[in-house]
Amino acid sequence: MNLVYQGKTKDVYKLTDGNVLLKFKDDVTGEDGVFDPGANTVGLTIEGAGKSGLRMTKYFFEELEAKGVPTHYIDADLDEVSMTVKPATVFGKGLEVICRFRAVGSFLRRYGAYCEEGQPLDAFVEVTIKDDDRNDPPISQNALEELRILTKDEYEILEALTKKISRIVKEDLSAKGLDLYDIKLEFGRDALGNVMLIDEISGGNMRVYKDGQYIAPLDLEKLLFD
Ligand SMILES: Nc1ncnc2c1ncn2[C@@H]1O[C@H](COP(=O)(O)OP(=O)(O)OP(=O)(O)O)[C@@H](O)[C@H]1O
Ligand SMILES: [Mg+2]
Image (tube, rainbow, N blue to C red; front, side, top):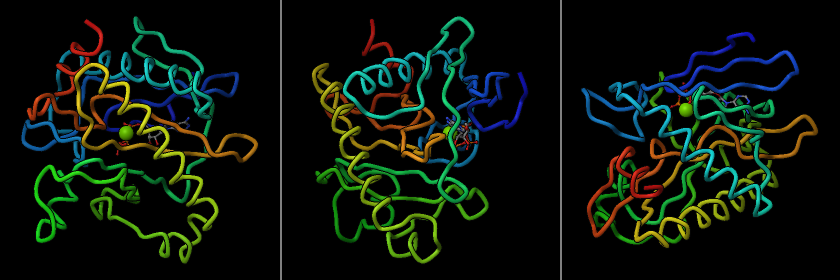
């Protein structure tokens, strides 16, 4: 087992059989000790955050697989706080795809002159490029095509998959009285070049509210499973 990348919230290992092992850490993104799923820095360490993230990820990836969504998921080991996945190649240097059901976070910061906090959005999809030095800038479909990161067809596949996945997660949370405001997904290509969902789906990459109150990631895990 070979450590190939140390991310902000996970360490990535290459396994001898060619698969990839994601080891979830207790580091979470944010700034000055305050959690922010949109942040680009490790803001704080919370004991149990890794296990909590993995538990939610395992739950949602198994649900998505059962619903026919192509994902990298193979299996998860909660005791080892790790997940085995199929190797993926990413688009460009990596993209994040965000699906928004309500105006909060960076959407509100950018477009606040035209919307109110919490205003409903219709599964609005936005792409950002993973570029910490440039603060993960949003990128248009035209720019993705111009820069040869995604063809128009690939963009459409990504957008449709994002809406499908995000709506599945939203429905699931909603059955538990929870309201999904936004969620961040990552995609890659498998060995045959097909698009699949990669990375994680956890409290660390979504904003969830209950009765108008924001629910922090670890509390979300408890509301979901306890
Ligand atoms: N199936 C996969 N194959 C290859 N790489 C993957 C796969 N799934 C996820 N990854 C990558 O593994 C890394 C996981 O580490 P982590 O989530 O800490 O990433 P990061 O990029 O440092 O931070 P962030 O995603 O918060 O910006 C990410 O770069 C992610 O794109
Ligand atoms: Mg990440």
